Amino acid sequence: MKKNNMIFWWSFWLLFLEFIYKVFILKNFFTWNTFSVILFTIPWIFIFSIITSIFSNRINRIICLLMTFFIIILTLAQIVYYNFYSSIFSFFSLTGGGTGQVFQFYTMIIEVILRIWYIFLIVLIPVIVAIVFRDKIKYEKINYKNLIVYFAVFIISLFGIIIDCNIDNSLYSTKRLIKETYSSMLTINKTGLLTMEAIDLYRYIFGFDEKINILEKDVSFDYDSKYNMLDIDFDQLIEKETDDEIKTIHRYFRSSIPSEKNNYTGMFKGKNIILINAESFDTTAIDEAITPTLYKMVNNSFVFNNYYQPLYPISTFDGEYMNLTSLIPKEGVWSLRVSSEKSMPFVFGNIFKKMNYNTHAYHNHVYNFYEREQTHPKMGFDYMACGNGLEKLMNCDNWPNSDYEMIKSTVELYASGDNPFAVYYMTVSGHLNYNFRENAMSNKNKDSVSSLNYGNKMKSYIAANKELDLAMEYLLDYLEKNDKLNDTLIVISPDHYPYGLTCNELNEVSKSDRCDKFELYHTSLIMYNPNINKTEINKVVSGIDILPTIYNLFGIEYDSRLLMGNDALSKKEGLSILSDRSWISDYGTYDSISNTFTLFKDKKVEKDYVEKMNNIVNEKVSVSSLILDKDYYSRLDY
Image (cartoon, rainbow, N blue to C red; front, top):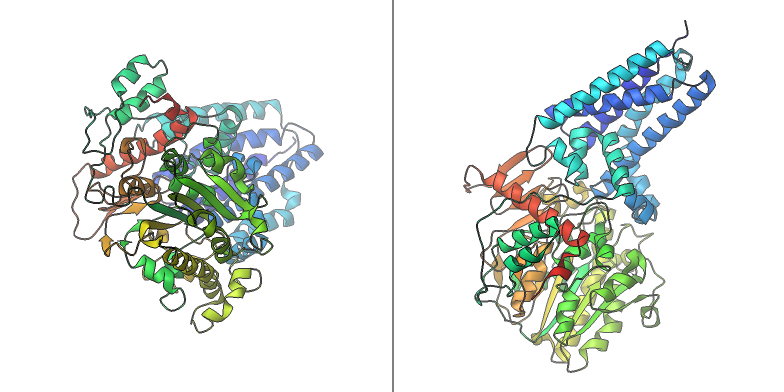
């Protein structure tokens, strides 16, 4: 009788790779979810076994080798990507060019691979064993009797999955993650990497709108001048609306509590603002002797002691999206690019442009990278970068280019006149790679860090950010000489933490443990004006809070309910949401992967606090997604 042992090969190999991901990425092998992953892997075992058993010996062997190679590459690529970006790549990012940003820095990829060499070794050991004992692997065509058994077990396993999906109806149950919720890491945790890839491919081909799970709240606010809110009649909007999802969003905003105006409301009314999204900016780059201007700015005016800037899958672009829109990025798409096709009246540029400000945006890298030539004008900016004008004013041939040169060559364009200005900069000097050979800014400022007792990568990172410090020194000096400084608020926020450094390298400087999942994102936010007395803010603040804070400071009429962030100077509880729907609040941290809440010292919470916060986080993520999908802001009447 002909033999075929593909069922044993795929049983071992698929489960082995899933366990590798569970152990080294998710770091929670001994949980009920591991059983769930096994259950979801069983159908794949039989599908792969059937595919590699129904042809001739030669064809089965070729298909088996190709499929094995593909699965290995996919798993290792996702592991490398996670160790680079703390997330996974989607089919959209593959086709949309999102992974291109990684592949531009191939030396960093090599560094990551060398850092996690042991994972590659563990994966390759079974491959070597299989090569050695390749004659023991049988590829003969199976008979119909065994084929029927395979199909029968396949069907039985599907029934097991259906039962597993229906025994839990929690917020992040397996069923909801498959049908309603887009969260790659949570889905992998419950179904495995292979099933998540299949779900992602399906959603890429057929599209996917996240379903909102809104807890109906008996709260409704009428327009009141003491709140940051607009006179929007949500009841009338609900009555006229025919789309059920739009109705749900209306109900969500109707029951949301607006932030109250406070002692800081209108402090900068009619004055200027410069918002800087600083590439890979981090607290560890701030040194009193080497970056004295940044040191002065971060330790004066508003001092945010608990600012967190989580990293989302599209890194810089998602960081810009959060800071400029106060919305949470939708997973699986370039949210900022999608927003360029939607109505976005509440974004930074459009708000100030409507108030007759001169609104400009500058970026010292390629002008059409991430298609910013489409997104930034749609947000209300006159946009200039390398390739559409900035190259005439500064040297754009370095990598990375100089923040100092960008500020020096552009500040006079908007600050020399009498009109108020709202300016946005996306810097690049702090970009990886962090070494003195490949990073032009690190090499330029190498002497400034020569005395530091850190490793070369950390020294290179600080040297690169010395260029941002020089830019801020020039900016403050120019504004002061032209009597603009006292009337200008300067805001500097990171787009993300410097993922070109390991947590251990960050710990060479950091006062907190940056290897902790949450402390990794604990960094600095600057809101500086020399006339503001030092004011320490101890609540948790995040990138989505920047916009509402600015709007309140400038006395802008806006509706705080329509933004996902909160005024950082208000009494509202602080909250920072990570890409896997974990969160940090003023009371503790919640890890969605391990389903663990850690209460901060000397804090107390009610019994249902975690459930309540999980619902708030889920609503904010879902509503942000549907605002894009449904072009929601275009539906408002105000």
